[in-house]
Length: 235
Image (cartoon, rainbow, N blue to C red; front, top):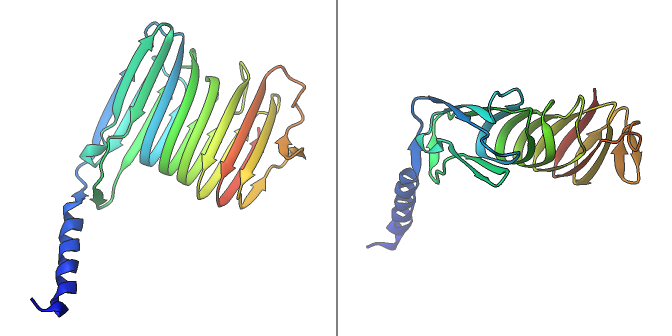
């Protein structure tokens, strides 16, 4: 074998291996999934989506009503729910696929949740667009870990109890809608490109609204993000 042919052989081997690690997109599949609450009095919800669009809102008649659209077969969401005592644990996870998808991919989750049960929500979102309209839900806690993309989070309106929020984001932007009449404190850490907090006061390294420390219910938010921007909007 001539040594000058070795780079070509290595390149061909790499390309063949790369093609073998790819998967073509197929026809879109639509699924509707419903999860009943059962005997649970509170629920921990884990949403794990690699890439796509995620929409979450209240108004479900059951614990969860989900509409899923995907065109990579291995992305079929895995849904598991169990109840131990009076505590429910609901996990919704995108199916794992180590291969690279070739073509225009589609992965959309549209999830409605019950307004009548206290929720601890954990969201792990790799890349894409997240639209979380959580008005009307009973939140114990909210934890969002997002990679690259755009996040819209609506926590405005009446809140029934105090809760903590953690947002850990990467490159992208975030818009967070906050209530005027409920005490709110937002602490921003990390390399945020810009923070727009019109109508809020910066005090001791955190942004607060006029209702902070004046209401029984308080929302404490911690944002730890990389390059990007964040808009805090009172409504």
